[in-house]
Length: 235
Length: 235
Image (cartoon, rainbow over all chains, first blue to last red; front, top):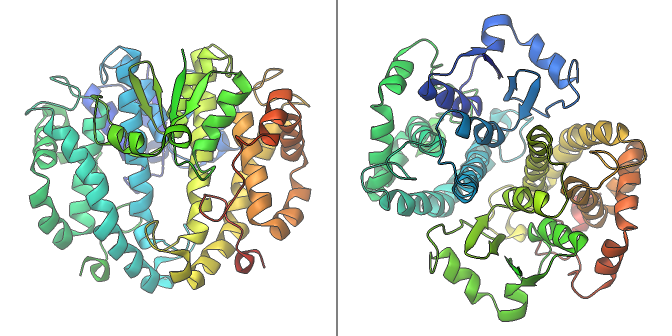
């Protein structure tokens, strides 16, 4: 089966967590909005041709099934492509980690959009500075400290053992994204999270991921996505 | 089996979505921090006695299994207590809705904490006003409009049909919470979402929920939780 991924065509955003899983799995998929335009995405969200319209991109179409929410899509793909261990308890543990990553992603987005997602960054520069300071003082140590502890238990492998999971792919993206958005802050901070950086490097060196990152399918980071580089926020 | 729910003892917060499910199911559970103090919660988060320490409350202990993240806990409880239909496609559809509710809950929290969760409301009154205005102008219509459309399809029953799901319970809590936090704004807004209000009323009238809401187990809304009533934000 060929999956249909629906996501904004010009950003990595939340869709990237799904793209990384599909790419590492070598799954057959079409990135619909990039290949056919964004109108098909709007149609599905309006409920056209589905009983289960998603709230927002990304969503995945697998045959007739439409699955919304990034972590939910990964939960669906995981067992179908060997991206999670089989036992239910393991699957829920990894899903809980993915949901914690989702919370972190929302807080990353809030650093440049503290007054709300529908306003421009340019109209909230000053609160963005304050939110970013709180984020790096309090939240990054809490989140990345948690994931560092988990990565420390994996002893040079992946977080669930010898086989990679979609959570490893997402943690790679978190490290890569924070490096892009906050190069100065992250350079300093990442000295304290060597296990997470090691995990990032192992993921980046996987043949399919390496090929994907070098391809035109990997959209460059930019200032419309989750991870945005604004010099004023990286002081 | 008797579940152990770990959550802050003095607020409804995210734990309330789990409490409502356990209560409606008539499940046997202990609200650990309320009955034994909060230190057991901290121990588990430090990884004591578990290979899978959760990031934050709420989390549920079921035998030896520790499950973090509200939506993940509900996903686990759903099929065990008849709170979701059995087919996987239906379960993922409802889980996607629950994750959308989780996103909404985070945005509700951000109305009083736009500069970050670790700062006091008193130190962010002015940005909170702006964020709240954006929330009611843009976000509430988008989220509740989406759920209104879904509730409209349920024809006087619940969103998945004749049987209640944990998503119905959570939507009840969203309506109840917005009424508490923003009585003036919500009174005006809810004229436009009659189906969702009807769903709220049907949930509230369920015997176990009615008994729970009248009991001391239901912690009153207050200004330490997700839904906080600040007059300045309800102008």
